[in-house]
Amino acid sequence: MPKLLSNKLGVIQCLAIFALLELHNLTGWLFLLAVPALYMQARYVLHETDPSGIRPMLEKTVKCVLIVNILFALGLLLA
Image (tube, rainbow, N blue to C red; front, side):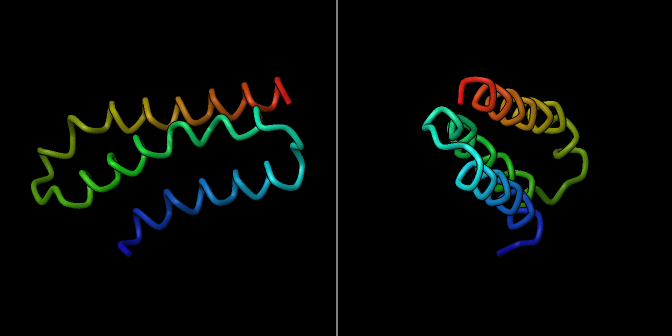
């Protein structure tokens, strides 16, 4: 598995471990809704060979991470 993809999945694993240990409600797992978007984004960036092709994807990557953070924070508030 490429390093970037494993790093993205590592972040999700860390959030999942925290949710498993600390949050005892299903709303704490809201961040999982963003996993497919993160996976597709990481796959696209890894398969793009031209640096100028990756540049436009930076905005989408930031939006994906923002969605994960918002969903995680919302899950913390609701749990």
